[in-house]
Image (cartoon, rainbow, N blue to C red; front, side):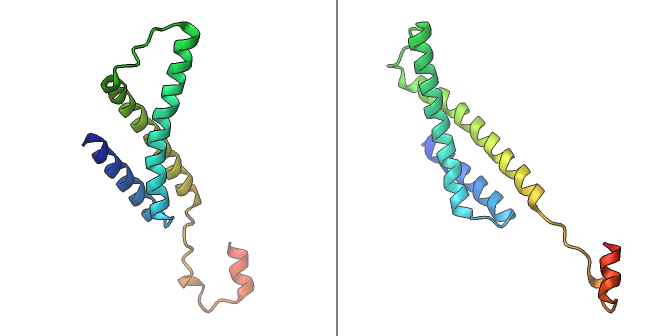
Length: 114
């Protein structure tokens, strides 16, 4: 049940972020969920390699513990991805020029002021 709530809220926040910046809403909602699961998978692979190389004797049978450990890893990856997208999209936003003051001016006067 906790996993379903996490998926819902991750998708919701990425959906709203994409909506605020006029991007593809469902694409980024699904991409946020994929990042959550991919981060958990990458973490599992890293721990697996560390177990083989360093002989950590990790208890692989403790699935509840691994699931609980994967939640903050996935949330941290999603938070990083969220901040990255937000910063990128904030830089892309163009501030509209107030053109009401340029009405009636010759075109060459407008170019010199800019």
